[in-house]
Each structure stands twice: as C-alpha cells, then as structure tokens.
Image (cartoon, rainbow, N blue to C red; front, side, top):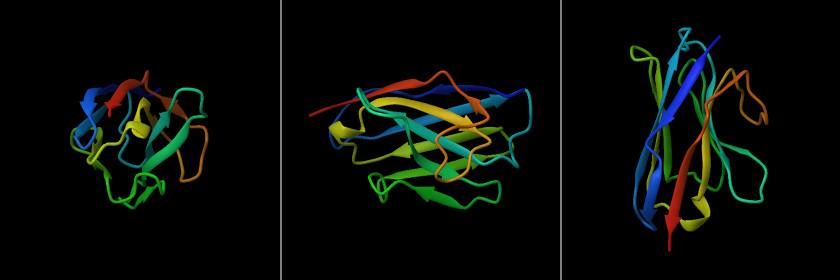
Length: 119
C-alpha cells in the first residue's frame, strides 16, 4: 500500500504562485508514474501533470508553461510548482501514484488539497 499526503494548497491571487507537495509512505515510489489531478467545481477530475519513473513530464494544455512537476526520490516526494495562476486553476488537487499520461484513474490517491485563485 502507498499512502499519499498532499500539502501546500491555499488561497492566492491571480498571477501568484503555489507549490504543492505530495509525501509518499508505505512504498518507494521512484519507479511509479506520478500525477497531479485537478477537480474543479462541477467538472470531472483531470490529469494536469504527470512524471514518469524516468523523469519524463507531460502536461495538460491548460497548464503548459505555467506548472512544473518534479520528484525527489530520496524524499519519496513529488511536487507541483504552479506559477501565473488563473481563477480557472481553482479546484481540489489530488496526488496520484501508479498513473500514466491520459489516465482518469490511478492506483493510489491522496486526500486532496484545495487551491483557490481569486481574480
């Protein structure tokens, strides 16, 4: 089993930045594809950023150039740096493990962290 705990969400003004962290425990996640999903109010959950076990990154078009996913295998942690935030980035952000680009499901989920971007 893998336990994922997200942190770093909050309220920020448009144009601001936030850094989300996802701490994993229970298993070493270095070989897992890891992702960040976003669920906006009234919308389906979508994969916005993915990083493979080898470090290859993939992004949804809506966040390309603004979000950066990274991983620190020594700390068993994955990050999502979010810059130039927009009100439409508002939602609950979920960390996921054992996920591939384009997936709508994952092997393991965190509990989610709220990100609210005010205009």
